[in-house]
Length: 213
Image (cartoon, rainbow, N blue to C red; front, side, top):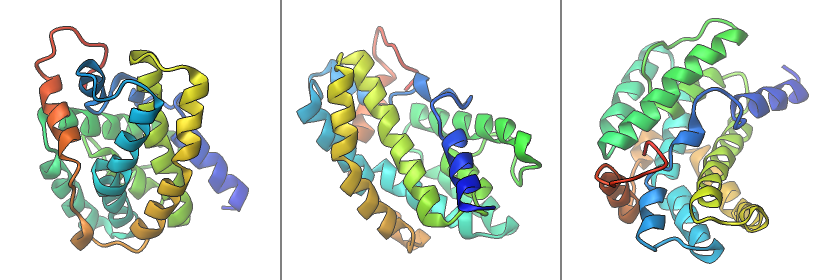
């Protein structure tokens, strides 16, 4: 593919309009908002940057890279590992449901190597093998951050201007994490964003909620 064709495919696959249902998941952020840990742009930005550098954003990027680089047998093992790494019921539902939905929609571009419930980063990483890893990871992490900002715009509520400013401020974090993840292996897996994981677990017991996770 040409560079323009690769860009076009990434824009389509990771657009909010792509039918994976990303808008329905908050990744535990709804709990953080409800409990006051995130209440404006100044508290949202470090929450997301922490996830990208040290939490689920980082681990998903490592899994993405591993799936992108693996053969068919290796991808099956990575998919099993990604499933096992989900820290809570809702986080598992979030990644597996979106991964399955992505694979179904991505059939429009031809047969997919995977099928059924598969962790989202593994599904996209496998499909993006014809795209340079740096570009694919950049689009992946940008979509991850943008979806969380969208959650805050709706749930804080946070103004769209402030939301865009948060995304702009995250650009250096996204790019530095892409550089690390592009040369990563599964040995680099690890997360220390424990407050986010706990928030995701506590989301299961929220009485009234807008999001699935």
